[in-house]
Image (cartoon, helix red, strand yellow):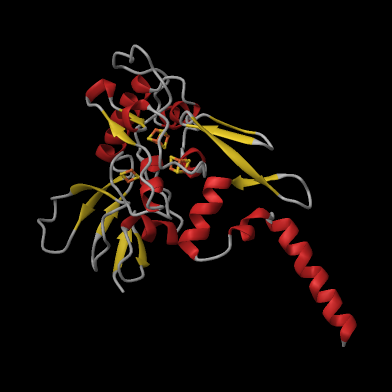
Length: 254
Ligand code: SF4
Ligand code: SF4
Ligand code: FES
């Protein structure tokens, strides 16, 4: 297991862990935007940059690396708040503020680096999408890939193919729930759900009448996991209640 120092504190990290994971072990906070523990690291937003020195390098030679996807190694020295780390994060947040001036998360992070207003030309038609690709990556992770990043430059955005209701989308909301700026709109009622311009029928728990998941999602997971579709018709609460009833009746038999 590699032993390294982060901001002067020694840490022995599990084999294969990243600098970000090692930092968390000793309570050193590194800001992230495109990282999620449940997904493969991507290294896209670069907000998690740190200064790195490795054995064998000149004593005064440091390299900026993204901590979310850089592996740890024995003898490394990492600095998470060096002047150029803070400056780099400031530039990234300044640019993000120009892209998404109304996103509270970006406003808050930028304020932490002393930036109240962007020094770049603000985008003409701003939205809150920071292009972190968490939504497309979680959808890919589910083996669905209903949405993707399209266009280039200022016109780059996340969208379904041809901007039409994505045929493969199952309405699971994973993309909307993982979005750090909450900018993927959707609506859910007891009967219907709509997201990405697609409308879904909701399955309702027969015991409570409450919406559980979409019919398309239930069919997808039933097929993938080889379980009957009816398994998804009941909510977790109802499943627990049914199980408790069964335990009670078994106890009464003893
Ligand atoms: S709601 Fe649709 S687009 Fe979003 S993650 Fe689920 S399948 Fe993918
Ligand atoms: S929609 Fe949300 S999750 Fe997707 S890229 Fe934009 S900010 Fe990230
Ligand atoms: S969190 Fe590491 S590059 Fe985005």
